[in-house]
Length: 371
Image (cartoon, rainbow, N blue to C red):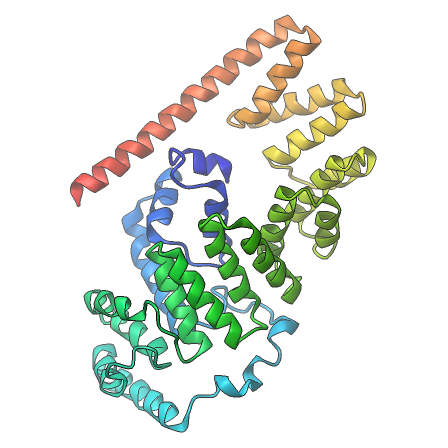
């Protein structure tokens, strides 16, 4: 994730890369476009797929992006919440709109709903109306409606969630937070809503409040690794290391989560247990490798740490952080012969990274000029 982020010249953070690829939240197109470029892809091939996915999510705003995901206990009473049942008039209106869409297309269905919505921009019918407009290619009409959603209270959790995602895409995070919190008030057992509010707050650098919503999301659904990782990352930033291990225990089969537990154990001084946990991970990423190396050093096993980093740098020459740590240890051990070769490889990797970044920047500039 950090390697991909570095190829965007730091415009996209590694946490944004992770969220974009996790499947739990549809990323903003601007960030996704840069990630596609960083991975050597053609954004034009993905833009229509992104639009289709966003449309699908807005048609079913209460569901996860991933299809077939197991329903957690936090959601089990959701369908029985009285406020989630539409009024009979709305039910009939939506049913009629569905029939119109089948026979006359999405634009005709949207026009039918527009007559029933009028100027009631907070109507729960908006959860169907706006996606129909997008499906019909009426993005300009959607853009005209969006300002009317600012500062109002929507009539349903789904409508509030939809408004939050729209303002998130516009990077108006304060309004995204307001609508996201409203969605959560109406559907307080929805872990995804809580997690999204946390992410909106994190974008505003409101770390304490963000932490509380990540904690809530994890408490509502302990089986979701993305909810857990967001909460764990926040706990690490607050130096709550014992809590990190406790949270990770609920998802011990997830190796990514287990790495966090190993790091947290090491930060508490439990080096033997940290080593055991980190070695249980089949494929350590760069942070995990360096954490294990630091654990070995703390246990006076510098030769093992050197061997670990040497193997990592050999198999992953673009893992420059592990390479830099390897060079540092070689210098400290007085291994001058090996040091010179390691420095040359590290410098070659830095050149490749600069060249990759330059290519991405050139593509971005070319795309902007083309627009």
